[in-house]
Amino acid sequence: MFAHRVDATLNREGSLVLTNLPFHAGETVEVIVLPRTNTVKSYTLRGKPVVYTDPLEPVAQNDWDAQK
Image (cartoon, rainbow, N blue to C red; front, side, top):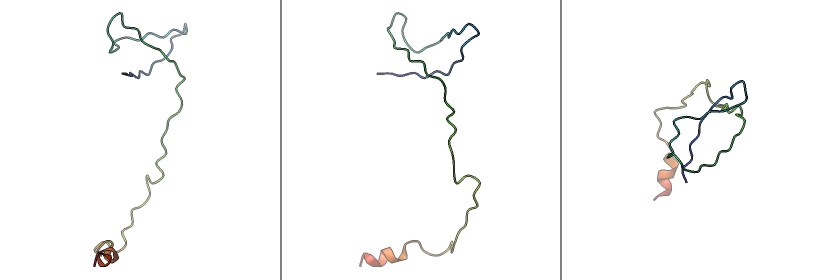
């Protein structure tokens, strides 16, 4: 199944016109109309400072000893 998402706005009469769809003329399609919800993603770490503690120290040094 191939789905195609289009964002569109109703005109003053409440009609919706879709053009240039990627389907063949005469092909039967299913149309589902949903109101657009506010889909703002929250990036909780955006703008937070990056802190490097001991940036030149080896990472996971104790894990290397566990391999012995």
